Length: 376
Image (cartoon, rainbow, N blue to C red; front, side, top):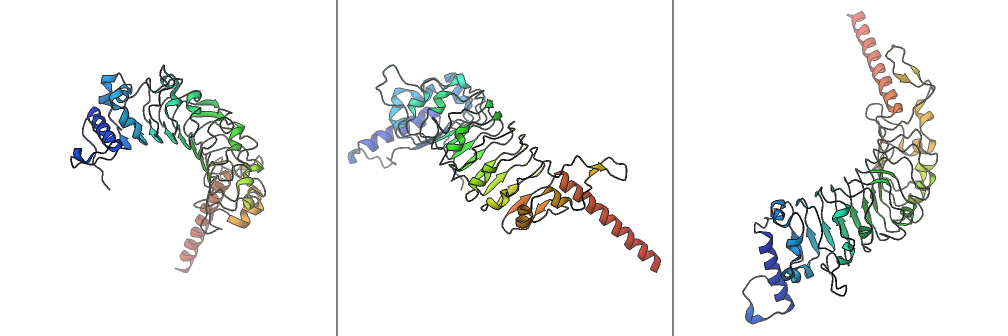
């Protein structure tokens, strides 16, 4: 469905929203002008960077006292791609007894404002959003750590900080002191190297996105017995070399597990039997089947092949093969369980199977040609 963008300038939109908020709070039939008098609950100011030039790339234009009635009713606000550099003004005023600026706001999108940094957020930023449930700040410059004022937004259920500048260990307090109600945590495309043990305490966590970081190992308790709502784990393109047994603790609920693009050489024996709910299991482009006993290919090309007579059974545990079957030599897909997609392409095992398959096809074609020639 196509929704026409409001072409009016932001101050005019806010003036209209303010009038409607006043009418909604004090309805008077004598003042009914035939227009919609309901309070505005959602404002979308995405991609309006030129309009924020006059306020020095800040949100001061929105925070004028005359627009307060409009802000009081907002539940959703988008400031996506507005060229913002500072959120100064969204803070606790000198009189702490004053009501917050956004008392009902549940969702705010500040994404794609690449000049928003930790210093762009006032220390009391969190005090102005008592009911905030979703915070979107993809493609900004938050880092190297998450500002405490952001962590102190106590009711958050969805946090998106993909493509920022987070580095090192993720804050230990997440799951312990902060964000204990989080359902979706998206941290793709940062430079995180480790995760805090608090993640293992997140009882409401459903999805965690950690693609394209530098994580080499996971906390021993994550995922774990407290993460019983966890449906999706995205850990592709990191540096994981091993999986621990606690993955089995979320076997009943976990449906998607993305581990492609890591350094995994094996799959723990017994793990696949525990992950009963899996519908997507991506292990592509790891090092499964890599062998120190590999020898150069006979054709002198330098490709390594495994000497084991059955490389599939040597590389994959029995419960994996029993449930998913071996990989297709061409696609690397395992089709043993209907409704479950298992990918192994790009591993030494599947590359070896593919080479062997190609060689076998060439041999068969050569034999067929020789037979046809002998009978002609």
